[in-house]
Image 1 (cartoon, rainbow, N blue to C red):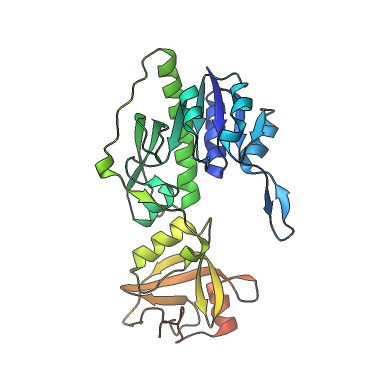
Image 2 (spheres, rainbow, N blue to C red):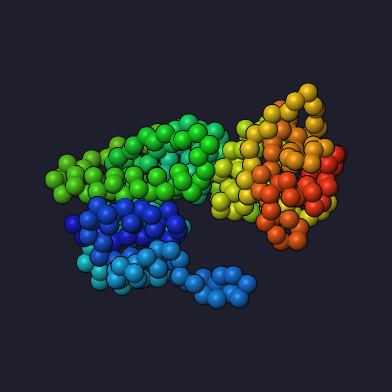
Length: 307
């Protein structure tokens, strides 16, 4: 069965890799056009396009699917598969051929742009991958297959994303096999149980030390590898690369207060403390928390102006 793939993100690329590993017949790929990247604002292809070109698969870059419908209909495909494409698909496209979506959540939970991040952020122990028919409303389509997945303790975003994408590609293979055998069926979602999640912005990466330590760790796990997590120290933005829970010994720290200790960069939070193991200094140098302490001597001061 010939498949047209639509995707534009790292998750999309990983799903596509898994589909190819499952020997599915990808006859074409639609992705977003090249974007300006970096300080030089040079045009750069996304990961999906780069991967497609490496595999010699035909690529169509489209800003709006509705503007390219005639060209798309000239592609010989039986079903389309969408994974993190980032565009609302027009009804005419959805009516033309069966359109499936690979969504990394236990729908109807976490409809929207950031299901993986929110599962981690909320401290969920399980998530899922759902293969569904694309509907006109966001992630509301009828479900063909859903598989629950355990979230590994302290697992960060990129690891979970890769696991879910691999599972997603395997599940697409299962669904395509069912369609070939005329055994594919769908069941409706319960819209009353639906929750919606937004796209995160860079500002969301601020670690709030008024929170509990597990909430801080979860935010770090969810956002550090993509948007980045950070604190402010004396008006300077300090990017955080690695953190851990820290056990205070007969010491009380206020929320945001930096421990008076030359060996550990420890910050108080609502119910204990967090150690910063690695960070980016105001000078732009990546360093250990210990080196930051010895270089900037912030003991007894506060991050995020929580005085």
